[in-house]
Length: 154
Image (cartoon, rainbow, N blue to C red; front, side):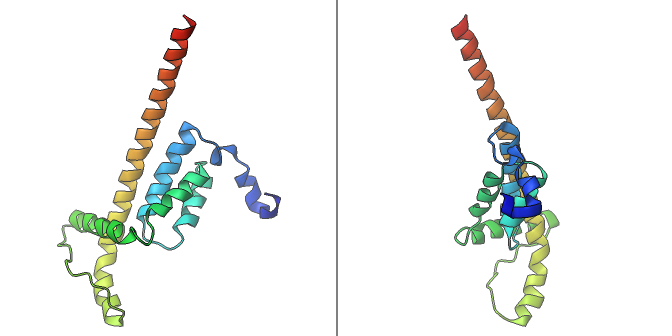
């Protein structure tokens, strides 16, 4: 990692590479949040946040690939519906893409606010739920192992 220069000091942090309850749960919230946001370079954003918050870097980046070219349409449409619901707007039934200035100005202008609001809400809800579930299950597993070990020693 010497060739990475300035980034080397951050990439040497063991928490971004090891699997522990804290780094994995933080990786889930980061990866699932950025998976839900329709921006280019989701992987870069996820990696930056993983390094900043000392989350598991490979898991954070890998989770972004849940939204891939096959799944982006349904995911982002659902996010749009959630955003439209929150804003109290009628969801546009006809979202046919058209490569024209008129479509960009008139249709996309109406879609981006509910899309990004819904994406942020869905990403936060998915991330927080997975964070809490992993924290609980990991702790439950550790307690169960400690009790089993205690019983074998008794």
